[in-house]
Every structure is written in structure tokens, then in C-alpha cells.
Length: 305
Image 1 (spheres, one colour):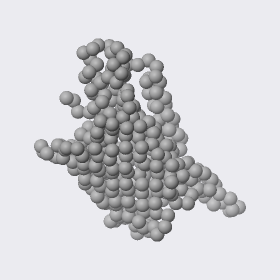
Image 2 (cartoon, helix red, strand yellow):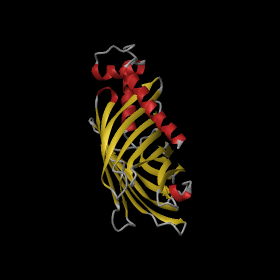
Image 3 (cartoon, rainbow, N blue to C red):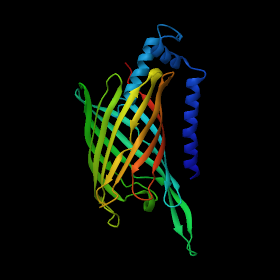
């Protein structure tokens, strides 16, 4: 739990630092970004501004594309509030590196490996009938995903392939579904001048695992819309992912809706994407979290020209 709190503090600290950097003293790359959007603030050099501004815009466009041909390393902190009768907080820190690989002259395969680190609150009954509030902290079940996507596309960019769930959760009792699962995953998006609109969808079924754990038949869909603003800012309207547990006869849906601001910075040669989101779960099972706060920090490594 101490480690999880430290990660939370680090995530908040990162956001504060980058917010201060954008409103206070600005580096050459940030000044170039403003010059590209307003043409009023002088850049360090007229020759350097267009390439830097173009690189920043390219990074913002790629950051909004989950299957961009670019290496990215997202770090995502999620706080799920008001869980159970005691209104506890679940914390999920997710690392999901995205690495594109070339398959000949026509295809890419984009790999995304979702690795959650979870603090799961729970209560232990005591002899006097009261409950002792405690929790489990550790690695959750990992989800490697593979998207096969054509290198050339017109209006719509798309990718499709397999998704896996590996029962790596430890401690097993609290943080793992105990099943190896597999299914198809698909993403499609378009990027007009105003921003990005798209959807990601998948479904997994358990094919092996412990017999004492319930089967897995989980549906996931994530529509997303980003509206681009000046100075590399943008607004996102999306969900954390609408899910349905088909194994349940009732209370199977979780429907979060929300969004928030984001911005792409470029410090020297390093591009980063920082986001904050609020989500309200308009549909959720009893005693599940009704709302979520998320912060995300992504290192971007666009391909050199």
C-alpha cells in the first residue's frame, strides 16, 4: 500500500510539474509550440519553429491513435471511489507499453501489453461480528494485445488481432480471475482536422485455468473523441471502457462516461502526453465504484523523419 501511495504521489507530482512548466518558464520546444498556434510569441529562431511545431503536432496526432506506428509508454493511475459499504478506494496503476513491428512492406503489428498493479480493498469478519478493513496489493492479470494494421490507409485507420488474458495476478485470491482467456480485438479511427474519433472493442473467453474460478466471458468497448485546441491542448470525451460480464444474468454492465483535458509537450527531443479524466459510472453493479479519477503520463517516441 505504501508503494501504491508513492506511485499516486509521483503521478500527481508529474502533473503539477508539467502544468507549471506550461504556465511559467517555458523551454524552447514549448515556445515553438505556441508560435505555431498563435504566430504572436516569437520563437528562439524563425528557422527552428516550423520543424518543432510540426513535430509537436505529429506527436499529438500519434498520441491520440492507439495503433500509431510509434513507440509509446503510458503510465496510468486510476482511483475508483466509494466501493462497498465502507466507501473504500481501489487503486489501479497501469503500465501499457506500445511497440509497433514491421511485417514487410504492407503491414504493421502493434503490440500493447497491459500490466496492472492493483490495490484491492476488502473486509475481514472478526469474532465480535465487526469487520476489519484491509486490502491486497500486487500485480493483476496481464493482457497482451496484437493489432495487425495496414501501413497505408485512407480516411479510416484500423487494426485487428488477438487479445489474451494471462492469470498473473498475485495474490491470486484477490487480484486474479484465475483463467487464461483469449479473444478478438479491433480498433478503428479517423483523424480529421478537429481531432480524433474512434472505437476499440474486444471480447475474451476463458479457455483454461483453475476449475474453482468462474468462467470468463467479458465484453469491452471504448468509444473515444478528442477535440484539438491551441498550443497542443485537447479535450477528450470517452469512457474507461464499457464492459459486460456475459456470465452474469443481472448487474452485468459497467458504463462509465466522462473525459477531461490533455496536452502534448516536447522537452528537448522527448515528447510527452499528459491527461486527466473524471468518469461517472452511470450503470454499475451494487457496491461497485460510482466514479473514477484518472491521470495518465505517456512517453512518446515518434519515428525520426
